[in-house]
Image 1 (spheres, rainbow, N blue to C red):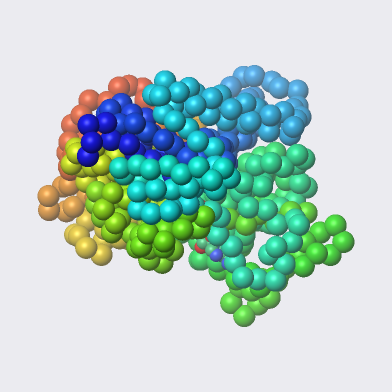
Image 2 (tube, rainbow, N blue to C red):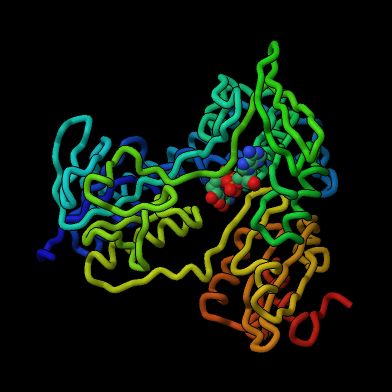
Length: 460
Ligand code: NAI
């Protein structure tokens, strides 16, 4: 590498932009090419805007329960336009912040679509300008998946990005796919007043999540007034008057669900279509770019990070991979570990997990499972947020924590402690014997660990 290496990063999402900032702080000359908006899916059409919308849904829930706290509200109205406007202002504040950081790092941001010319050069399609670099990081992200059924290209069928641009609240929506995005959107729309049906192919919502936790979330989703159909195989969508009718089967029975709009949330897949990796021989398998633990592809000097490498597609993991890639490019050896990657669902109640589910852990270990319900936690009682629990799975012999699953208030913030503990290979005893502040929700983690090490105080 030359004294000041030139690094080119394709894609300004949560894999690409933190990598650009890290590389510039490590002394590289960095160019970042982005064809759309800095911040990528996460900031513009994913994590951030959906969480902003869910915060509005949370305000609705607070209004509905205000009387419990001694506050009488005389009704409320949803101003959907204002809800969407607030979401936009949250996004623009954060994207402006990222742009300022890129500027401060003297990162050369190029607007355009990159295509490989050779393994050290890309061309910006819109301008024809060629950019050479000593190393290239592909961080082009993912796009929504689809399903091959009739009517899927209809005008009322939206993906999550299109749903974020709705200008009026639909009276009814059928959500196809009851995964993370599907359930988050379903809960937001239902809180705003939309009639929502979820059609999920698998036997339960949010497949992949610890089954006990997932079924609690499913129960709460149904209780909030959302129709949930599991084991549903969608056969087609037809427009009938002002409505769209989705035909599906469950077992050998055929049924229909109709709505003004259809939201398709059946997963995302890596997207590197415009950059022509085949021209330079970058290996890809099953639609994802193949990398080693240092995030390097089979072509020396070409790295990839984030959703484009497939596997777990989460923003925080993408950032970690992007930083890992540039550290390796710049000579600091670093290797990715996927042992302690948290995943979060911002529903009501929130869900957050790290490590193995009970089902998975039980296949390879002799396990012990500790649970502590939020209804026995003082802070949860103060908040009047009693639903849910912390569940800790440990190895029966060593006591090492193998997985932590939280469903309940602020689960997505609470999980960070468990991530650190798992990263450091801590035991249930380490969690149980750590003094936690009182009164906090975090005590539920300590007490769940205590159930594995002599018993929790606040359950009989
Ligand atoms: P997902 O993989 O979580 O869920 C897709 C769901 O669609 C699955 O439950 C699947 O069984 C179902 N499905 C697939 N084909 C179907 C069909 N033909 N009919 C009915 N159901 C069908 O994918 P999702 O929700 O689209 O999210 C995409 C990615 O974005 C995921 O990797 C997710 O982890 C990430 N993400 C994470 C968030 C978070 O951490 N809070 C929020 C949003 C997205």
